[in-house]
Amino acid sequence: METESGKKREKFSSGLAVFFATLGSAVGLGNIWKFPYLTGQFGGGAFLLIYFLCILFVGLPVMLGEFYIGRKTRKNAIGALAELKPGTGWKHIGTMGVMSSYLIMFFYSSVAGWVYFYLFKAIRGDFAAITMETAKAQFGNVIMGPVSPIIWQAIVLIVVSAILAMGVQKGIEKITKTLMPLLFVLILICDVRALTLPGAWNGVDFLFHVDFGKLSAAAILTALGLAFFKLSLGMGTMITYGSYFTEDNNLFGTAVRVALSDTMVSLLAGIAIFPTVFSFGMEPGAGPGLLFMTIPLVFSKMPLGNLLLIAFFFLTSIAATTAMLSLVEVPIAYFTEERKVSRPKAALLNGLFIAIVGVLATLSVDKASLLGNITIFGKGFFDLFDYLSSNILLPLGGLLIAIFMGYVVKQDDVRRELSNHGALKINSLISVYFFIVRYVTPALLIVVFLNSIGIIK
Ligand code: PHE
Image 1: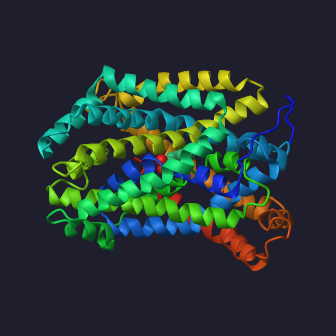
Image 2: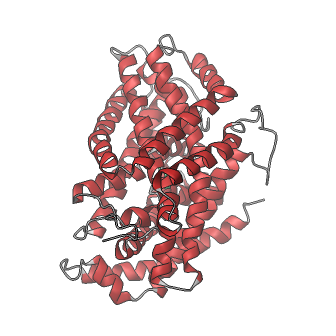
Image 3: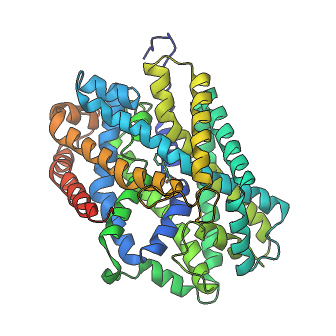
């Protein structure tokens, strides 16, 4: 397809590339940082069960909808919706998506900065004689700064903007294809190590033991928000990536494979972290520092421990970076296609904007942080950006996409696209899809929303 500037619009080169690039978007800090600490805070197994249900009945249908919208139109999130329903307000799902992308990037780049910093510290050998107390103290120093976390956040944004400026679909493809499998292997090594710690079983029990007594409306809303955040949904990322998919890609197959693999990575991360938490007598509800305090302990006193620690934080940096590429690609695709800004310029300006506002998140992580005492709706900036995006904007975007798919677009058109113009014989599967996306997905989202109104104080 020719774009106005006469250049060919980029596309992923094969089905495998589609899979790994999409998985590269899904797998990120969500699995390794957010999933474990939220599961810890909201009570383990019961939270996990709700999370699975959210993926199945909400996440997958929305993902498929986004793939359809993107591949059918081959446009950025706003342009794609404007093309499917010209002259209507539907394109503002895309506008909301661009806003969510910024909100997420403000705090995501901050946490990614901690990960880069931890990689640097591991290389320097800072974790050689680590104990539970020093693990906590080191994390405290890293996030308090105030100067160093801002610098690391800036480094993260320079890396992300530079890669995006080059527009290296080929680069992204290559990175994700080789490093995703490696990340998987490394987490497995962590798992083996964590499971052989004394008292490890309590951690496994915590992760998988379902205790409905621990469930609350807040836990359900959080699980739902996590499902969206994890699978990069409700904000146009999968529309944008879908617009780069190959013509013959089986969209159903890709959605299922990505959701399964992503969930697997989260579970493996949980299996690395909770046994460690219990073995060292830490609090599973310790919050955003959980990953950073446990992983150095997992590898301490283990042969080649420091080398493995370096590898772990290196791969986590990569996972965070490829997820950020897909986050920032949403506004970049919009600015280059709809506003005719050059790619390097769009990358630079977006990076700058995120860096400037992102400092607010970095300086408000903890109550004791420099801006930690400023609160809006009872939350500091860091928590506010996270809460607004994950718990409100992404599920709202998802609800609108489900309604759009179920009631607004022509069903025949969706059938044609999902079956690759009849090449795939999946008519009854598509009928099941329509049933879920018309009735089940919106109903669940609305119930959770109504419920959450009572929670937002
Ligand atoms: N899915 C990514 C993660 O789990 C985060 C993300 C959210 C990426 C939304 C793109 C869009 O880390």
